[in-house]
Image 1 (spheres, rainbow, N blue to C red):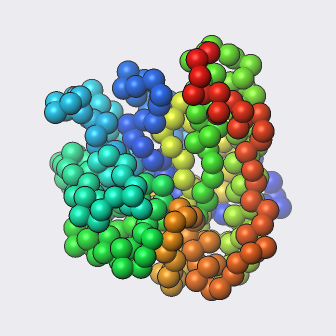
Image 2: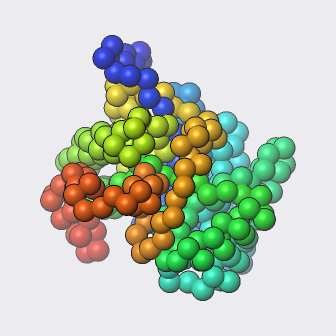
Length: 304
C-alpha cells in the first residue's frame, strides 16, 4: 500500500524500540509467538528497523532454556532487527540492591549476547526497566560505569507513553472475546500515540530548539501485534522516516549533559529540561489515558 506524506510535513526521524521480548502478556509463554511474529512481519514487510530489549528469564522454564523461545529471538535477528539487554528479571533499580541489579544486567545478556556473537555482532545497548536509572547520581553512575566496562551503553527514550495501560486493557478484551472493546481500545491507542508524539515534538523544540531524532518506547504486546501497522502509518503521516537506534544516537544532542536522578522514569528530553532548571508548568499538557481505557485496564484484574 502506498503511503503519502503531506507536503507541509517536515522530514522527521524516529527509532523504534520494543521492550520485554519475547513478549509482555498475561497469557503466559504460549502467547509469545502469536505476539512477536506479527510484529516482526510488519516491521520486515514495511522495511522498518527496530531493536528489541530482552528479559532473558522469559527464555526459561525453571532452569531449562526453552528452545522455541530462543528461536523467536533468532527469527527477530534473521528479520534484520536488533536486540538489546533489558535485564534478566526486569528488576527495578530503585527497589533492588546495586550488586543484585548489576548481576541481573550481566545475566540478562548471556543468551542474547551469544546470539549476536554468532552473527558477528555485539550486545551494545541496555534499557533500564521502567526507565529507572537511579535515585542518586552515585547509583546512576555506578550502573553506567558497569555498562561501559562490559561494552554496553544506555538506550535512552524521548517519546515515553502509557501504552502499557492500553495494552493490558486490550489483552483483557482479547481474552474475554470482546471484539468491540478491542476495536475501541485500539482506535484510542493510535490516536493517543499520535497526540503524544506531537507533545514531544513541541517539547523537543522548547528544550533543544529543534526537533531531534526521536526514540520511541513500545512493548512487544498483543496490541502492537495487531495494530503496529496503523500506528506506523500515523508516524508516516507526520513526516517521519524510521531509523536505527544507532542512527538516532549519532545526533550530537544525545551527548547533552544530564544530571537527573530521582524516583521518576522519565524521558531524556525531560531529564535535559530538569538539568536546565525547567519545572512546573513547563511540563504541562502531556496527553492522558482516556477514562474508558483506564476503566478497562482496572477491570483486567477481574474475570471476564
